[in-house]
Amino acid sequence: MEKPTVVLLPIILHGEQSREASSAYQDAITESLQSRYKVIAGSKVEEVLKKATEKESQKENCDLTKCYGAIAVHFNAEYVAVLSVTKTEGGLSSFAKGAEHC
Image 1 (tube, rainbow, N blue to C red):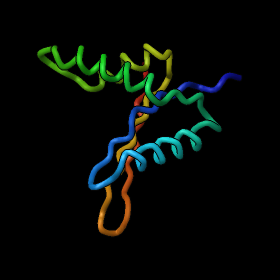
Image 2: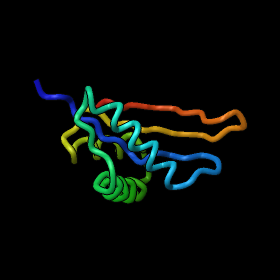
Image 3: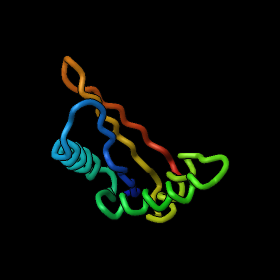
C-alpha cells in the first residue's frame, strides 16, 4: 500500500533563530514523518507556496486555507503540514498543524 503524501511547508520561526535552525527542524520533522508518509519539502514547496500566496493575496477575501488547498492539489497530496517553532526563555516551543485536503 502506498503511503499518503504530506507537503511540509517551510518552518515558521519566532524569536532569535537562524536559518540553520530552520533547516535542522525541517530535516528532523521530515525524517520523523517519512515512516508513515511520502514527504514533499524544500525549495519546490517554497516556490509553489510563494505563487499560491501571491495569487490568493490579490483576492478581496484572501484565505490562507485556500493556499494550502492549492499546494495540496499541485503536489497531489492528501495533507499539508505547518510547523511553528518559538524560542522561549526556557527553551523551544513548537506547534504543528496539519490540514487535510478534501
